[in-house]
Amino acid sequence: MKKVLELTMGRALCAVDLGDGSERGEYVPQDYILSKLGRPHRSVSLMYCYYPLDKEFPGRISEVYKDREVKFQWDYPYDDYFPYLGGIGGSTDGEPFTFMRDIRRHGQDVTLTLTIDPFVTDEHLAAIGEDLKSFGRLFLRINHEATGDWFEFCKRANHQQVADFYCRAVRIIKEHAPNVQTVLCIGGVEDIGSEEIVMENEFTQAVRDTDIWSVDKYLALHWGWPCDIAESGGTTHCRYSVREVFELTKRSYERFMHLCGGTSKPMIMSEMNADGDVTGPYEQAEMVRLFCDIIDEENADWFTGFTFYQFRDRGRLGLEREDPNNADVGIEQPVMKTYREIIKRERFLPLMTVGGEMELPVKLRWGSSEDAEGIAVPLRFEAAPVFCELFFRDDSNLMLELNGRWFYKAPDTKYIDLMPAFYEKPINGGCDMMLKIFAPPASGENDLSLEDGMFNYYYVLERLPEIRIRTAPTEPDKDITEGNT
Image (cartoon, one colour):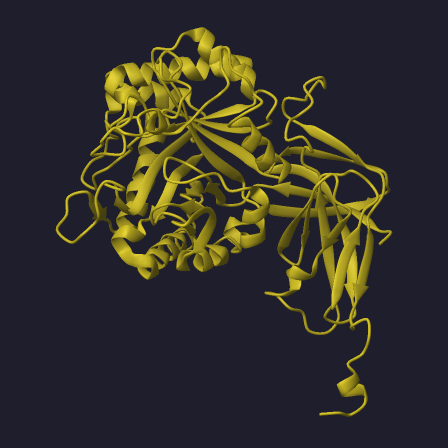
């Protein structure tokens, strides 16, 4: 294990992101998600609200009004997301920052969905920017689904005011945190017979001012959850054509580009899934698979990523469904197996490029999950391993990949068992592999004292871990060696 090669990680043809926590479910730690899915995501999406002018804030509104009868999920004084505890008079010691650090330690970027009272002052927005500037590249989705009428910000202001607020928030937050990439999430083209996006006059400037275009498109959705049950003939759910959803998303991208004079920007889907309340568990998995098949078949290079909503859900919009007896337990759904297969396809994997030889110590750079410099260590396996493990003598914070399986090594961890890399993908006979190593920020935050600290994190790797590879058990099987049956 003396030879070390340069390794760079770039963007996938189509990035995969994951929702983790919302009004429908709690945050699930990244260690658990990594163990279930076997690879990190480009980004993990968190959903929070900021209504600092309301007397109930920062209470979570469904808890403040826990005895209030509601007939719709959003029938509260403000949106029932987790409260954003930063901002003026706030602190970055609590949520969402604790979860943001967990996400970044595990080699992923953060997508922060934040619904904001459109009448907050410029000082509130500046404070949000100050909160976010140490978290490297961060996707900020402000007042999503802004052409709808269900969120509180669309009840307090008309849609022109909502659009104008978006432009103001983008300008002020990015002045304080240029590392932030803003995501505009609006309706887009919603009718096959239409050329224009919904509320085009109101949102054209927002389309031009944002960094990233986005639509939320569910292949099936029960929006009446949890206040009713989706039954045939009901009016609070719908199922759509997968092909039509893809075509409407493409037309939205083309119209966004038209509004920007032909200039292209990244186009993503910030929420994608088929609701099992409508489809049942098996057709949910098939619809998700079909959507990703179309992306592959169409070679949709204009489509740069989607967020699967979400990992664990109280309803049927998760890879797991929350156990009603224990919120800390998830019940795996059939879509989990389908999703694991999808995210291992070449289109959805980050690009890895191996370069020339290097000598230790080596300075590793982490820009983002699509821009990182690590190392590759060639390994030789004479046969299928029985033991494959790493022993560390440092406090490094690392993401490791072997045979397509990713592992996390925390600063205090001294031992990593790599054998899960061979359980689902066994090898036969001898072969060569690369152990890939990257170093995302150990604290989850960048060092702003560095000249480029807002955009890059650095770690000097002094030594490689010791590796133990064995292709036979420690002791032989006595029944075999002695000829017993």
